[in-house]
Image 1 (cartoon, rainbow, N blue to C red):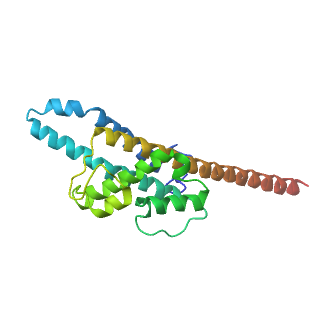
Image 2 (image 1 turned 60 degrees about the vertical axis):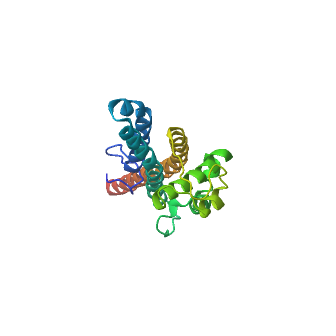
Image 3 (image 1 turned 120 degrees about the horizontal axis):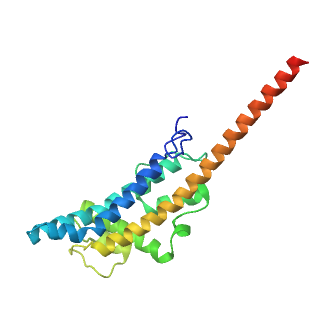
Length: 212
């Protein structure tokens, strides 16, 4: 069998590219975070070690957002009531939250606690700063997050604790999205099973009629 859409389970190989890719990325991220001390110990020049570790940590927010975006796009594309989406819609929390709620009746608010959902919003905005302003806080960031830890012109700190918390949140969101995919896949397999049963009944009726 061919894979039934990029998000679907393949009956022949038992693999699912969208889910496997997401799960592998989450495992890799945890491995990075769990081995920061080893990286630090392996580099003699501690200034270099700090720069490398900071660069690694600050790459994680964008990688997490892109990983959940890819999973979301793959699963959403498999929905029977899907719509044509604007580019990078799943990089915007409010838009993607609304889209999931309209499409399947569940969303971030169901998959996360209120505190986790609010922290997710903050981390998305910090990711935006790291990508577009080299981490320098601007008025837009403060207006969107009400983050009292920073002032305009200061540089955000994205440390190991922040990276671990954000990874945990994205993993939970991924679990919610994967449940949608499993539900869709189950329905597809049920329909396929019924299709084969119907074909068998038609064959049996035709064979009996010929014998008569």
